[in-house]
Image (cartoon, rainbow, N blue to C red; front, side, top):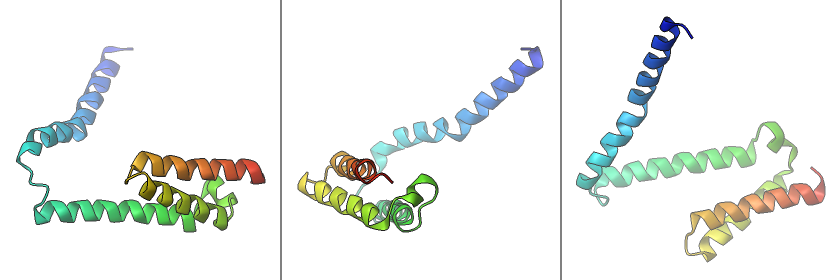
Length: 113
């Protein structure tokens, strides 16, 4: 590496830090002052949840890539089992995601999609 390559790499690392980690640290500092019950925070949580729900719906209804080869009924079954596990596991996100993913993987393996 030449001196100019090292300088460019250093600039890239600093800019990447400023774009990502700076906001994370500011969030950690500001988190003590955030009221989770405030209307703004509730709205932000609802928007984030809606975005995740929209992505999951897109993956289920209109997938791309390898997931497009899996039939709709199997994708819907994986979602249903994941939701049931989430509810049965006292709202355990890890349990719900794991059960849904396991259902999808086992279904693909069993039916050869």
